[in-house]
Structure formats: C-alpha cells, structure tokens
Amino acid sequence: MSGADVARALAAPRIVVKVGSALLVDEEGRLRRRWLEALAEDLARLSARGQRPVVVSSGAVALGRRILGLQRRVLHLEEKQAAAAVGQIRLAHAWREALSAVGLETAQILITLDDTEIRRRYVNARATFETLLRLRVVPVVNENDTVATAEIRFGDNDRLSARVAVMLAADTLVLLSDVDGLYTADPVRDPNARHIPEVTAVTPEIEAMAGDSSTRVGTGGMITKLMAARIAIEAGCAVVLGRGTVLHPLRALEEGARCTLFRPRTSPHRARKRWIAASLAPAGRLVVDEGAVRALLRGSSLLPAGVREVHGEFGKGDAVLVIGPDGRAVAKGIVAYDAADARRIAGRRSEEIEAVLGWRGRDELIHRDDLVLLEPPHPNGQVPSHP
Image 1 (tube, rainbow, N blue to C red):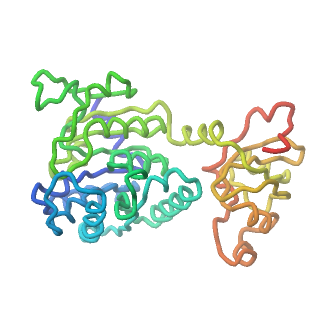
Image 2 (image 1 turned 90 degrees about the vertical axis):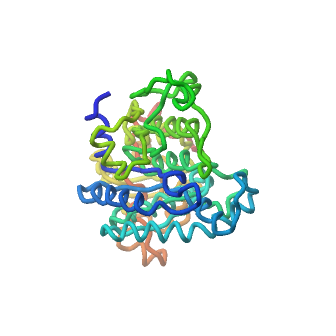
C-alpha cells in the first residue's frame, strides 16, 4: 500500500467519517471542542473540493452521563437512554456550531437498526440522505439510543457507520480511532505487534488480531471496527482505519499518517447492482412500452409515462420486474411507489404526479441507480405469472 492509495480513498466523491466517543469527549465527560473544530475544518476542505461528507458521531451518552451524574462504566439500558436524551442535544449543538463556523450547514439524523433493515424505512432514510447531500448539507448521524431497545441496537457506531456507508453507496468509510490501524496483536500489551498497512479480506485470522476497547467512554473496540470493515468492503466501500486523536485527523491521513487500508474487491455501484439482481425477490411487475425499453437500455430511469400495466401488490422499496411489450423481463429495480400509487400514475408525465396523488414524490418510478438490466432475458423470454 502507498500513501497515494489512501489519498485517493480520502478524495472519494462520497465519504463517511465515523467519530468515536473517546475522540470527541474526554475522560471527564467534557467535549473536546478544539479537536471538533479542527475536524470541521477538514470536512470543509473536503466539501470545498466537491466531495460529499457524512459524519457518524458517537458522544451523546458520554456527554449526558456527566450531566446526570452517572459515573458507573456500565449503565442500565434506561440510564443510557436517559443520558442519550440529554447528551444528544449538546452533541447536535456542538456539531452545528463547529460546522457553521466553517460555512457548512448540518442536519441531525437519528436511526436504529430497523431503519437499515426494513425496506420501507431504509428507502425513506436513503432518500433523506440523498436530498441533504444534494443540497450540500453535512448529515451528522447517531444511533437513536433514546428509543432503541437492547434487542434492536447496533451497540456501537462502527457498524452503524458501515450500514450508513452501504445505504449511501459511499466510496470510502473512515474509522477514526485511538490507534493508527490494525496490528497483529494489541500494541499496548505486545511490543512485538506488527502494523498491518493493507487488508483485502476480513478473515478469521484477521479477526483474531483484535482486542477489546480500552477507553472509559467508548463502547467499541478493534473487533467492532473489523466487523464494520467487512460490511463495507463487501459492498464495494474502501475503509481507512487511522488515528483520530491528532488535530486535523483527515488531513494527517492525506499527508501520509500511518493507517490500515481495507480494499474492496468491487465498486459500490457494481455491488449495489449485483445485490438488486441476485438478492431481491421481485414482488410485482411493471409492463412498459417500447419507448421506455429503449430509454432503459440507454441508462435512463423508468418514468411513469412509459408504464402501461402494474401487476402485483408491492410496497415502496420493494423489487419489481420491468417487462417489455413482448413479455420479456428487461430489468429489475427498487420501486419508489407502492402498487396502488403506481397504478394511479402509470402512463402519466412526472409533472402530473402531485395532481394525481395529492403529494409529490420522486419523478421516477424506478431511479436508474436502483435499476439493473437483465442480461440475458428470463429463460424462454417469459416471466413467471406470479413473481
């Protein structure tokens, strides 16, 4: 691995930066304000050169527990939720102050595990992210600790950041830590531990190198970072694991600071297309005209105007087959409207959607980023009667 490889990863168009509690909050539960201001300057530099950064930030519980006087390392679930409710206000305010000082607008997004696994909620969350990024707003994401139960929590923001990166088809995930990458063993306990500059697969041997979290305010450790790296690289997202304790940590990594680069074997775009093609069972069918087929083959989205028939009962965010006028399955994609609304707007121009439905959703029934062409067509050129 070369420094140029890391620099290229950090110059990616869409980048998610995960910030842990131990970086943002000191051992006494106080915000590291100067460090946050320096990171905000790094994010402003990324934004100025056309990148779209997203932040996944821990720290709400760590800030709130000091205010509430909860000093024990291990808190009961309801105590952690109370601390999160108090601390999240302080955390959001701190991010807003730091980012606005460098000319960036910010938005707070609180999500749970269900938001990344239940299709309708996933699609809604993704649409919100996409809109914010298009408007050049920096989303600051945290787990919604105030309502998540033990059974539906991520438990750490490393894995949350990986899920967010996958949701956004991000090119790079940066995990800022208190160490400068992955070692063969815990370097604090083993002086012979060797730094590993590059990983291409998170194997059991790699996992065996992980230790436990050593900080009082953090909940994650190296094992959660490796779990996050596996999620991300399987979706085509590169991962940079590096030291975040210095001021301007992103700039330091760009300038050659030691880190570990986890290389994906594919791109986010290809990984998402493969997932749509192979992993999602179609819940319905959209029969389209020849003009729509030609547009899809040119790489366009599927607009309501080209749809002639809607079959099946599907929800927003489900996968559907796109059928040409000859009965062949042309494509499969994630639909932006449920079956009832799709029937109402089929054959209509996009500018008519609001008048028909009473509200304005997406212009496309299936956006081109959510659509994959089927090559070759379905066997025998036919489509199952009950997809």
